[in-house]
Length: 336
Image (cartoon, rainbow, N blue to C red; front, side, top):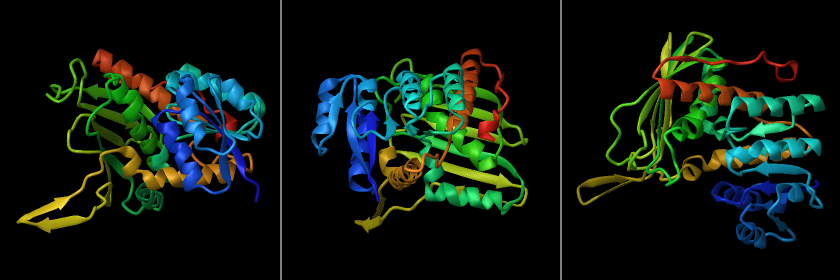
């Protein structure tokens, strides 16, 4: 079996983590080029890879010898240009969320892909590859709890990074619940409302945290999301589906519990790369296998566009305090 040569664009936390996974847990692939605007960081990540080149220009990494697919983990505003350049070379792409920061940019990606006449772009919504989420999806698809009425979602982080803004609670965090809800229910999100309680004392000055987001869907279901990025105690993602005939909840995976000195101690993951470690591995393995055949094995560019459009409506709702409708173009035939 041949080994798929991958260019990784972005050598920050996510990019470096993907490079590590490709080298240690994903077979059939190797990183042959690394690009980052910080040249020293690109060199540092590439240094541990046999024969991989380091670049500051994504275009140079895409043109490097042996590149057959592209993994994009750079900041969102840089995604569109890198994706379009990859599509011009007809290279399969795995792009970390968001596909683009805005719906207009995502539409341009759709148009570029449609000109090729085939889907090559996959978006890194890794929850679709998580075993618990897959189990819930299977249950809902089989009608195991009847017609879904509600999804109750909780998304908590121990602390937010210094650069995190109030808008990013929606565009960079709730975007995961947006994609998961669309996928689990098989429905589009039609409207968004955003509510803000008094900010937590643990939130940095000026950050509206936590927030409560309400999504309405085309099938009449309601999805509520508590997003709390400075909860203090750890990383926690849960989802409960309530249907006409029952309910099902995921995300309460039990860690090892230690009982001593009259107390019970149980660890809570502190980071998404820990909670979704297996999902990231499964995502990469599936993408590598599909990319070797020029295919997509997960959420595609349409899913990235739909999530961007919902988040765009969510930001308008957050700023205005008014329920905001989601505007989607007609779904192109390539993505049906």
